[in-house]
Image 1 (cartoon, protein in one colour):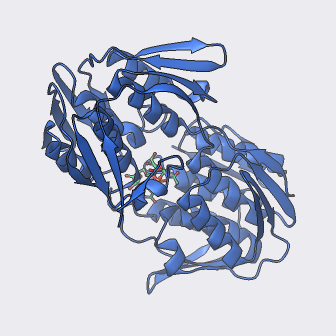
Image 2 (tube, rainbow, N blue to C red; image 1 turned 90 degrees about the vertical axis):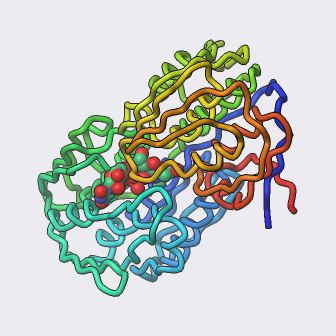
Amino acid sequence: MDKIVIEGGIKLKGEVEISGSKNSALPVLVSSLLADGKSVVHNVPGLRDIKTIKTLLKHLGIRIEDKGGDVYLDSSHLESFEAPYELVKTMRASVLVLGPLLVRFGRAKVSLPGGCAIGARPINLHLMGLEMLGADICVDHGYVFAEAKKLKGARIYFDTPTVTGTENIMMAAVCAEGRSVLENAACEPEVVELSVALNRMGANINGAGTDTITIDGVKELHPAEHTIIPDRIEAGTYMIAAGITGGDVLIKNFPFNYMDSIVMKLKEAGIFIKREGGLLRVTANGNVAHTNVKTLPYPGFPTDMQAQFMSLVSIAGGTSVIAETVFENRFMHVSELRRMGADISIEGHSAIVRGVPFLSGAQVMATDLRASASLVLAGLAAKGITEISRVYHLDRGCAKVKRIKA
Ligand code: EPZ
């Protein structure tokens, strides 16, 4: 069984370049379903989740050629409108094919995503949006069956901002008859990037990045070329790696435009952050300040940074409160951090983190992608050896982790 073994206590020093964003690449790759012909996506990260979505797209009939981070897609020979369980169960974001398949075929059969460690993560808002656009939706035997001769523009209100829900409905509405208005839409940079890619394909989308997105349906889209933005969560994770080890790291390809909440909170935690031209230097002196954080939809502090931030403040001088407001079960890393000596208690949707002088290496288990990253960070700072098992979670979103096979 794969595991990662870390000898902690070493100050990280050096340079790192941020890869393309996993959560931007996934919807952009899927959007190639919407246009007949050859498209190109640059700076695609080499991750397991990306491999999974490419497998699904190939299953649907898209011909894919990979040249490093450049992915060439040809959607001229689509063969299926069905996304089977065995593919969807491995990655929830597969549900993003629902809208595009409905546009291309007038129907779609997509497996309901399976359970997830961090929460129930229903797709009711995705289905509500499609119904508002005029699709007939039926859920049966674990599959969503959607049908619509022609989608019609509508005003759609999301009870809660949903990133992939906004992306799915945006893709479904681009060729609908008339205007669609998405209200209480997600504002994440990945949603903005998808709108940029779709507009390059001939769509007419305005307002992405705000909570109200207007889409005027067009007759059809044409293939285009797009470059994926840097991954803001990867960038924030490397910043914490420098901070938690008292190191000095120079970050290349840093996504300056989307990092305000993360930069502010890390500065509060005592990390020194300085822009050097197009690069960012992150240094720390080993003294972490206790800091409270509340996860929120963008531009708030990202839930995908919550576990990593908890590792950092677990060695702070003082007590920090971390409130998780996006997912209902995103504290699985707490019990593993406790095994390393962290002093954390959970009260409802908040974790009370009482800083300890140091963490100790231990055998721990990864439970989801971001929890795995938090354990790597804790292992880097801990005294002694940390062994992390079930690291296939890490492969889903981290390309650069060196592993020692057991
Ligand atoms: C996206 O997931 C990201 N994944 C997640 O990153 C991220 O944590 C999440 O957004 C929040 O920022 C991708 O972009 C591929 P949501 P998504 O729909 O779209 C509820 C990672 O580690 N909800 O914005 O699935 C839901 O339960 C992953 O890279 C409904 O109730 O998240 C949650 O409480 C983890 N009904 C809230 O909305 C719905 O139909 C936000 O979820 C949809 C969502």
